[in-house]
Amino acid sequence: MMGSCARVHALAVAWAVAALLSRATPAGALAANWGTRALHPLPGDVTVRLLRDNGFDKVKLFEADPSALRALGHTGIQVMVGLPNELLAPVSSSVAAAEQWVLHNVSSYISKLGVDIRAVAVGNEPFLKSYKGKFEAATLPAVQNVQAALVKAGLARQVRVTVPLNADVYESLDGRPSAGDFRPDIAGLMVGLVRFLLDNGGFLTINIYPFLSLQADPNFPADYAYFPSPGSPPSQASVQDGGVLYTNVFDANYDTLISALEKHGLGAIAVVVGEIGWPTDGDKSANAANAQRFNQGLFDRILAGKGTPRRPQMPDVYVFALLDEDAKSIDPGSFERHWGVFNYDGSRKYNLRLAGGRSIAPARGVRYLSRQWCVLRPDASPADPAIGGAVGYACQYADCTSLGAGSSCGGLDARGNVSYAFNQFFQAANQMKGSCNFNNLSMITTSDPSQGTCRFQIEIDTGRHDLAVASSASAAATSVAAVLLLALLGLVI
Image (cartoon, rainbow, N blue to C red; front, top):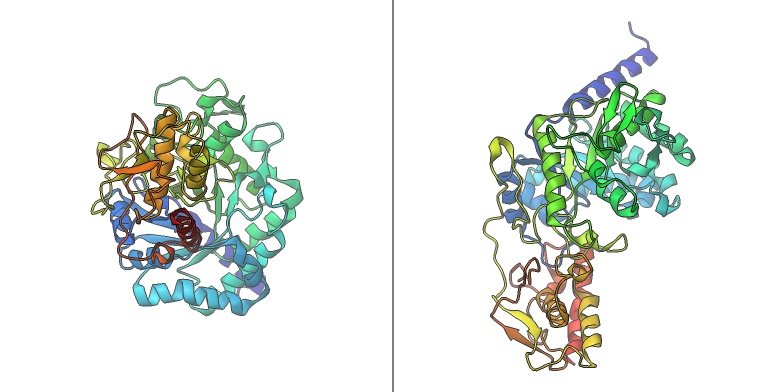
């Protein structure tokens, strides 16, 4: 008869093998991050149809957004649902709190609405250097309590636990992936976390952003950020690591983590890519051409099932992101609101080839507000002393990130800049009466003022509702919307 220690070891091995097999992506399978931080979110049913039309069979939510989860019921789309960083402390300190969270955000959606939840992402990049250790102590206890809650709910075999981590949790001092190891200040924490995940059938999730490598370092070799085209010579920045030539930053980055895991006897853990993508605005390197180049290379790899030298089979890869989000924080940069493969309304930004050579399909059944825009009056001068305050006011409450240098609307003249800002506020305010009233400097027009790459948008009609209580908006977006309404009151008064 097998001893207790041997049984535990055998169970851990079985969990690890099952996790590796289940997290390997079949050729052609696509996954995406569905963010909900938008003032006028694309309705859930439209978003689900967009996912299915384009072959996405897995989706990751950063929080248990009720509208998104309801829309995902009985669709066959597998869901990873996030437990935000703000909840790590209460969940880590109380198993009861973890049980309540699982009950309301996992169990009920599975049993009552038929949502195919397969994973809980505990926290989001909790060990990020810029957090300065804020979430480090709470993360592993929160993971343990969520796991215990899933076991109690009878869901531990269906729903697995993971922690999405930023790539700054590991490093290579000489640049070779084989020299990878965990960041010294959190090495012990990483080993304990991964060991728990491995022993309990969980998996590790890592976020890799070649764009951020390029954006942060003016000397970073641009071609190394992209996947090389078939038949093209390797980047001059390619890294020779023994008998392996790393020709792009994704392969090198991912395998640096695999090396770190192997050094600590944790090489059996499945590693999912939780976020990877390229923005289209808000930075000189963020444009549709660069995003298309990167994402087509990524999609080609996913569709071919081609992994990295150390993990030859492609893992699950969650593209970041499905849609643009105009209520996201721009603390990291203006590009944060422009990661979507699709625009805010599900329209295509650029073409991507899917399996069989077919193109990605835009969203169907989108309803828009009236076809009208708010612009600077023809008889008003952009040099009017009141213009600066009016534009600043508009951009304080609406998204003007596309106006930056090198961005899609960066080439507008002074009149175009003012009109763009006015229209962004007008649309964000649901085209409400009085929202195009900037000291009599503005007017409503039915002639599309879009120019070149700069699109003057018309917002999505999310139905008859007060913007401050939009049912499908996330809590963060709803809060922003409430502030916007207060701003509108100030504008009217």
